[in-house]
Amino acid sequence: MAAHESQMPFIRNLASSDRKLRTSALESLQSFLASRPALADADAQKLWKGLFYALWMTDRPVPQQRLAADLAALLFRLQPACVVPWLRAFWAVVGVQWTGIDVLRLEKFLLLVRRVFAAHVRLARENPDTIPALLAVLAEYPFDPEGDLRKVPVGVRLHVLDLWVDELDREGALADDAAAPLVNGLGDLVLALQTCPVKPVRERVRDNHADERLPWGKAKDTAAGDEKERADEDDDEWGGIDD
Image (cartoon, rainbow, N blue to C red; front, side):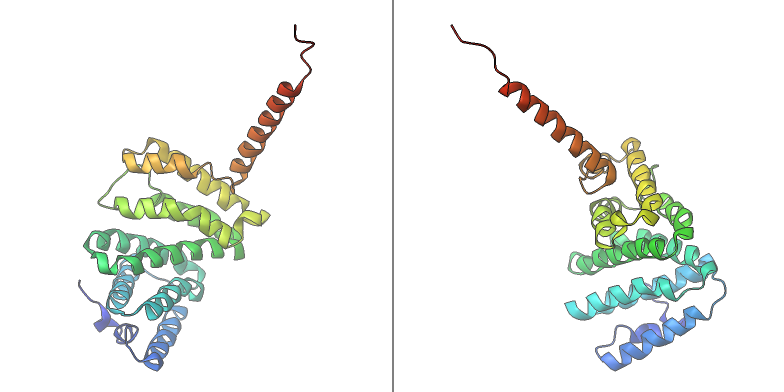
């Protein structure tokens, strides 16, 4: 894997076994990002390639989990103009690197994707004005209906389909009226995947779009319950005296 830590010396230190060194590197990275008034797509991708490499080199579960959470939280250090390039770069780099991840390292990158998706949701709750831009990024990458597997491998697509409702729930978006445009928008993106040319994606959509935690899933569940109750009442009606 190509490393880009030479452009920012602190990236290598994010994978250090020395906790103080890791903390110092993270603080340097946070300060670097916070100081940027704008971020070109190419620069954002170089940064994420370096961060991908840092997680690649990080050993032991607890440091891996901590780094995945820290990398996802970098989103909240950015100035507004940098948010979209940063997120687009993340999905672009993940898409390019995904098929090269060996099975021993896969778990920590699955966690990174989960944490970054959760950061999308958290940002939407904190700043609902960002929802259209966030939905546009997600529509371009993990929920892309065209099925371009060179851009977004099937493993990434299926993983995001597995986690999106869980993270909406965990981040409190399903109980937040202000986040309703995000929830409904994601529902529309997922529903559009019914025509995706990738068969496993279409199959996964049928499983999770009707999740009972979702507003429309609750409605279906309530309707089904009402229908069952009426059927039970019909069964209980007196049918007269048997001969």
